[in-house]
Image (cartoon, rainbow, N blue to C red; front, side, top):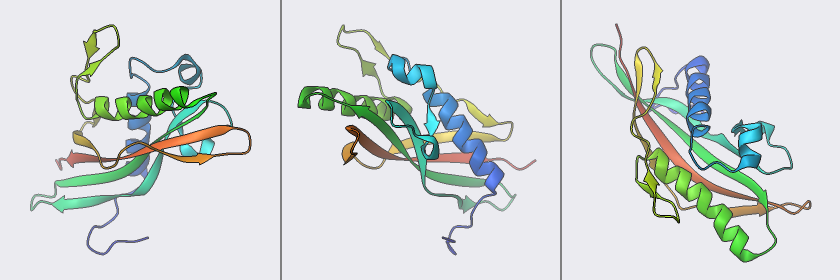
Length: 167
């Protein structure tokens, strides 16, 4: 849906954002082995297996334009984890993974149960003239679906803000 207040960026720019986010999330230190095997996916490709992916909530837009042609872009996306569980303890643990990845994307310190910690030190460049300014969580992780095959989907929504410099 077109937004008159905020113009859409090109499809190729949005695809670049999606691919960069997938690559970034694939570097999360504590991805489960089942997710590592397949890699992070785009939502349309979710199999009925344990999977982690992103989905577009709303198209990337030019949020703020500057006189010289540079702009701040904004892309709203969803982090989604599909998994099966045997009990509520497993469900809590699986939902916690989504929240932890979201915290990591925000640059927060993550502490493992053994007391060691890590954080995303810096964002990768999107391209030569595009840089991530921030990634922010906009909602708590929630269970949204349990399908007939017994797989459940938990999600959290995020906003990527980035700066585009014009040469």
